[in-house]
Image 1 (cartoon, one colour):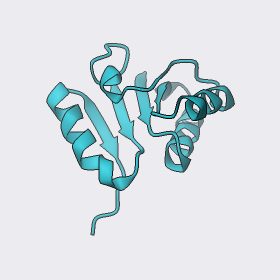
Image 2: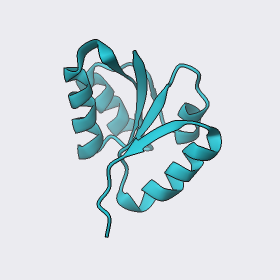
Image 3: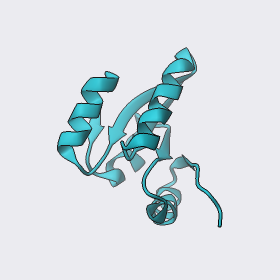
Image 4: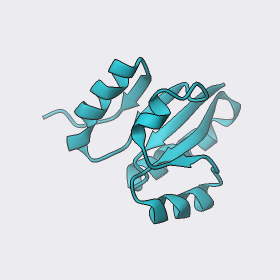
Length: 98
């Protein structure tokens, strides 16, 4: 099973977690990450995911996380992807190319 952390729990992050839930046993939404603690706690309760953190860097080196999905505002995608690559993490993001 692929254990994923979802970074950015706005609309896109929430939709991705819901989509992963439909995959069943193949992928697990293992951790939610957001800098807004109150929002993160609410999303955690809503989605039934107990592992949460407010620091993106924590999930990059966590051996219990296999991949990270970057669901933050577009302006943050590149620096976060670079940080993930430098940490040796597998990452994914969906972004519009302009």
